[in-house]
Image (cartoon, rainbow, N blue to C red; front, top):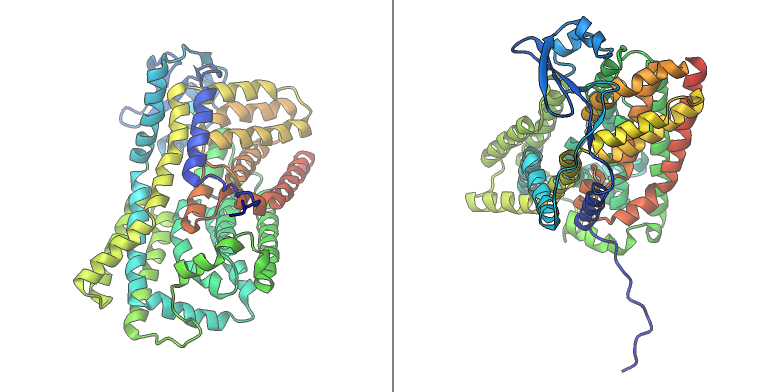
Length: 511
């Protein structure tokens, strides 16, 4: 037998492997980056006092007054602590101290590596439960045939109007991102929208781009998002309306560019499927998301199926209202979809056995996605337990002081790109960094609102590619490799960076 001269193609590591590689690299960094801490100020609502905790974890209590905040050079109104706007410990400027690095030998390092993953899963259990319940609900709706019938009707109406699917979905999600931080909740949209995109002639990567760019660019260009712009502005000692026109223009420009970029790729794939970056899995994707049914045949859309879809859709309406208006988080959202499950038990028309089997099968389909959420959290846990986050912050705050104002704000953007990679919590990064970074704007003579912009756009931009963020979770839903996403998004990433640098320069000139 002749030996094959064709080399075996190496596949890119899976999402799990990518996260583990990042975790190992971050753990290695903890041996070289010194441990250190800022003193922090926390509001105790029960005592109406501020708790001041230094780097040695010694705590003193001070009156919750503006005078106390001025004493520690924290330019935040005391009312923002009392009304709960600032609910995390605020870092005290110029209080950084290097501390003794926690001792751990080989055994301790291995233990931390393993424990961080278990702890990450434990701390993410509310999101994971939501994902599993959602998967179960989708399994039930699919079993009724309602999804198939509904998609057939929708695909008939979309003929010749496929582009509007991208425009509408991206715009709506981006509005959610800029107003109330719609992010992890969008995981629920993938199993529903992917079949629609496939029927429209697009590929699964188009669906991911449409949904993920909507949430990533939307949250990056936050205008009134309470978890980023509002809390960062308050921590910087300014109103969140300061600099609003520039942020609105950024949202319009960035979202518009993202839509055009996605449409350009999507239409190329629709006209020539061979150009798809995921062409090698097109057949398996259609089988997985569309099933083995002949979609060209007409499908009856029964009243029972319509009602099942209506119940399912109402779950999303309640979810969005609860998150935006009532401050719900994943526990409350999971309860909503659990209630949807019980309603479907009566209206779906499935027998008891098929109903349970469909729920379990649907949940199993998203189990891998849920595990990735937990594993991604482990990276932040290693940094927290090794006390290197504050050291990185202190290094950059010292590096950027005394620069030319335009170079300063560009470098500040770069700082937040790096910090955003390691610290994925937008509110946590805001309260940790703003009391330290915002006063630097006064030194170089620019508006503090630009520091908030650099924070928003920096930590939001890195979300497009950071393995510690939501992108690996999104890609795992459709089994797309991280390398294919990088290949797709690189040109857009460069374009958005140029756009941000231009907006920041303009902001300096008009401030």
